[in-house]
Length: 220
Image (tube, rainbow, N blue to C red; front, top):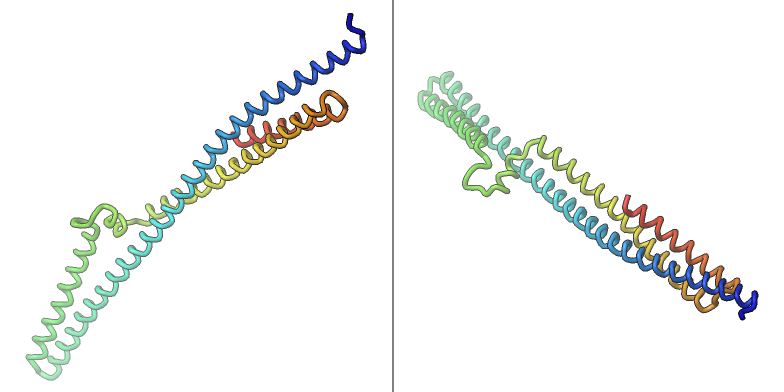
């Protein structure tokens, strides 16, 4: 027959072993969950960062090409206007000096300037068409509204990357807590059901609880 003290010790040992076994199961489950979360958030952060970088490069290209194209149009229109004004001045000077040659040259220059301006306007209106590819065409024909929409999307991707990065950090912290919980559980198994063993086991439970909290925070 087992003595009351021996029965009490056996019951305490069984309770200790039960808690340790349950804790090991919880640690294993949380490790699997946190590993999945960590992988998913790392991938999500990477995708968002790549997309944000792509949009940044695309915006830079659109702004550069648009500014260059518009600036070139302005310069050429100014040259056409200057040619027309030069022709007008030459024609006026020819009239003042009764120089039919200067008048003819002036009128020809004025007409050439006007024709050039009209051709530039027509060319500018068709910029971005064939034979350009669709991407180059989109660079030339980008509107302010399109650029603003792309900036907003780029900012959204940055926010997504930051959010995924924060959740990834929480999952890594949770895995660190689990590693500590595993070490404490192993220590408790060595110390058994004495005071020190229970302290180590309860500390492991606390670490596992902190890991579970990190898992919840990593999901929401």
